[in-house]
Length: 256
Image 1: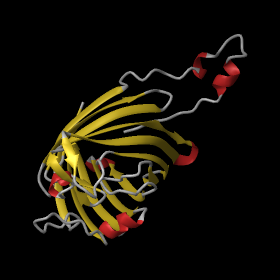
Image 2: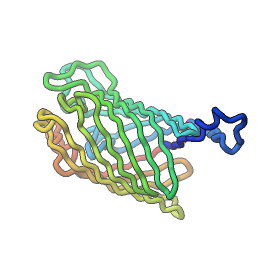
Image 3: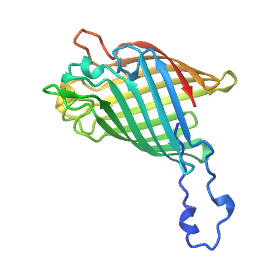
Image 4: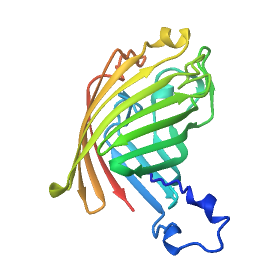
């Protein structure tokens, strides 16, 4: 989704009378991309965001030839109200905004550094003992071929409604292997969510999530199947639904 290049030669170009044409980065003919899709369950870091109900989602991304990118993505959610985190009102839309820089370098290595803001839209009053759900993270990732390692760090005091959680972090090891002859991608993932603060630990200790996935490209329509599970997650709805239980999800996404 994101691309990146850092051009050191730009410092030298300022002192040069002329610049060779090949030194000028090419303009991306299609810097803007869109996507829209439908999922049987929206699962984030092993935890359902829709209480195991379907989700409609879509996004918009801009990628510059220098590697800078900016984008936004939205989906319906249910977890804030279902968790009894609000006293009145509702927050049923997640709108993410993000920017960063990403690139591939020599010998199949790559990196990605950026910022993401998870915004939860709606008019609501937080329940006593809960913070506003909006959350900000910075992240950095390194990759080699189809394997990547990513670290995310929460900047705000309230991570996903839990007070006193600045410094909560997530480490993500993922592999997505393209089977080009079949037009498919096979994925495997393991992540570790570590909460900061004594209040967060009282709500839910740190946990591990797992994911296996497969996706197929049908001429810009991506059909995906995933299986997720967690170990140590103790998020429950008032009606007793375990948000981190084993779950299978289907999704169909159209890329523009």
